[in-house]
Image 1: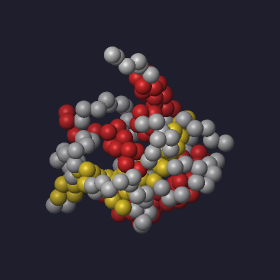
Image 2: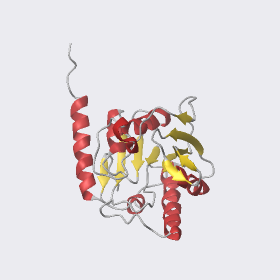
Image 3: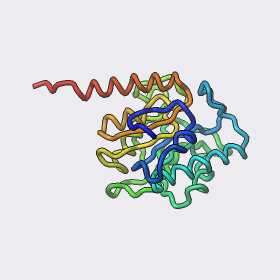
Image 4: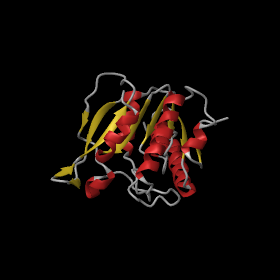
Length: 220
């Protein structure tokens, strides 16, 4: 039995194995990119074969528990790999304002947001006005000790466009809780999975702080 508004300290595959079909309204994740980043307890340097196997496993479960209503945020180099496992997805390009990652004769200045659900209303498929953590000084959001930190503003925008109040949202790679905090701020429920207990502690503190902010009385 899965509790709502809780982050489970375990693999997303373990959490989802206990979740019923179509048990969440939407999923949003920014998964590890297999770039050998230090997440504390997760091995971010799988072989190409094992990484593709893992993508296939968790996306298959995403489809099952959400009735194929989910979004995944990935770096430009990974878009094709993920799209192969979700060929019905639409892509939103998210511009990276920094110089970008060198790739052959170009600098990659974008991320891909792959989404299998229609938006609540007509939207642009190029998002150029969200700053990413890698943009240094220009990224004005609060920072946390997670090498894969996701933009809170990006997460809020995804939830605003593709979910509704009181929906239940799942994130299989919750990290320091950005998806959960965005859910609280927008009156959505959440369920998450995260391997690193230190990240969960940070997430729970962020959630409590957001809840306290929402309960503050209005100033006349």
